[in-house]
Length: 469
Figure 1 (cartoon, rainbow, N blue to C red):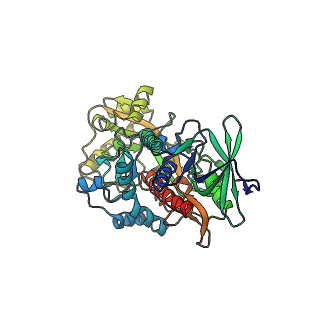
Figure 2: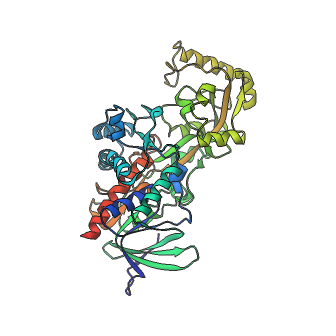
Figure 3: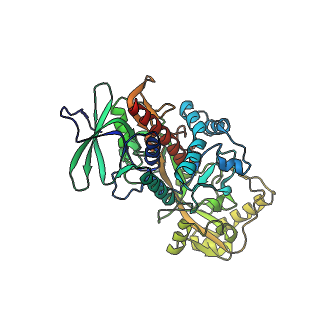
């Protein structure tokens, strides 16, 4: 992305801290910088801030929070760090993993107590997909839109100047890599330059940049059907600016996948239906994976099937867990949920071989009864067999969010390849390297927002202190 030398005649406006991107990371950074006494200008390219935060389910994983203590959940930074390293097979950057593990709970408690963000815990997600205990903190409505709206309101109350329709298309810098300001192109095509003492990049990942995806994420080479389910503005600009300024990048092939995107509707299927006893078959009527081993890696499992699709199968009891959630209501209203009274009738609605599906059905019943072992390693014991009215939703695999990015230190300050710090550049959210290691199978549920909020807060604190100094 373009860099330019600092204008000799100065900038149109000077601000202590400029933050680019008004998602969870940028808004959290802005709140922390304001708490640190800095004047903050938060720039968002969209007229209406939404982005990946609004598109998510609004969950952030965090360890050692007051919510956990109130529920008797024994968790701390060491346990979270151990889970991160185990999930990523030791491939997560230890420094970033330790930083997130030690500061995530502090960040959630601070947002609740200082800025009235209405986090609460979702108990249904205890002990799934690599978390040894429940760390799922979300909104009452279980939507990212509520989280995003709450952060925007908190920023306004804190005195953050948020400018929307403001696309940063150029970063100014000195020869030593010090960022001195940005150029902003407004929606009416007017241009202005803004100088700063500290710059925070929170422009999210690069999922919408097809060239960067092709260059860095090779896993999808064998699965050409994948869909990108993320914000169209996630073009990797922040990462590219950081590299141009001399920053190092890491884990660029890491991404969050999801094997339960309703096809062809592009709406997520709430995975509680599977976690609590539902299962997935392909168009041949056969199971093909341990559906609860890896919620991210399941994306590739589905994409490797004929037609790159699968069917999630569940019953009324599992439907009751999700039918009040907005995504499921949308799917039901669109006719995406096929329903029948018998497995044979359901197979007909799915247009899959009834004989194979009935055989799969019988196998799952034996697994639930403890009379057989799952060839894919899933433990069905303790899960009641599906019964009553039955349902199915067709799904495909998707890329939700890239996880690689700029390498940062304990204060979210961007590092050079030699480990030294860039003078005044900070990064968070999808712009910074996350805790997911490499590939698709290191992603912990809610790590995206958990890392965004944690590094965002640290970036804001550090930027404010640097501007003050």
